[in-house]
Image 1 (spheres, rainbow, N blue to C red):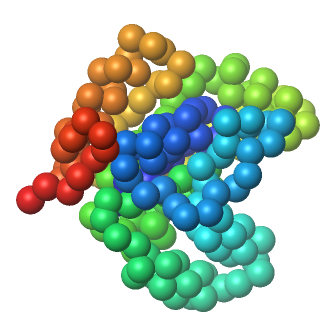
Image 2 (cartoon, rainbow, N blue to C red):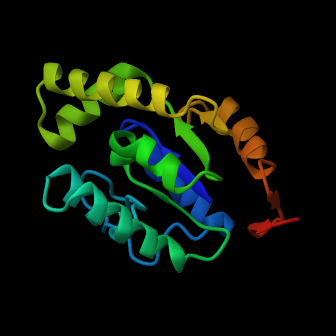
Length: 182
């Protein structure tokens, strides 16, 4: 399984859309497009809702684990998902998905901050706190994990990173999509 991670507003939606179009099932129902992301977020609603529920203390961590495990149980390879709040739960997801591979998205810090301010109306200080906090959680949570780092705003790097992604782990590029290979 592939998890697309980043602090938010850093290209995770573009990356998740790309991965989905390659043939990795990133979800059945996505958060709809809007002014903040007109091409769509490509966030699986099931995972997003569960992440929101535990982070807002609507369900316990124990209940979250049970519910996420149930969702995982009916996914078929190749599959993955994306939600910026994975950063907040990265250690939990690593425990539930020990074989997961991660695509970590990066973008210029000022661009992320401006996007957070524009889309979510955060002041610069709040945007910076959230960005630094999520980056720290990802740095700590992805230690020793199989990770590909990409920057979708760098056209020359994007092609090399896509090629690297298509050859990671048990996935191989098949022209029309990605298929599991043994």
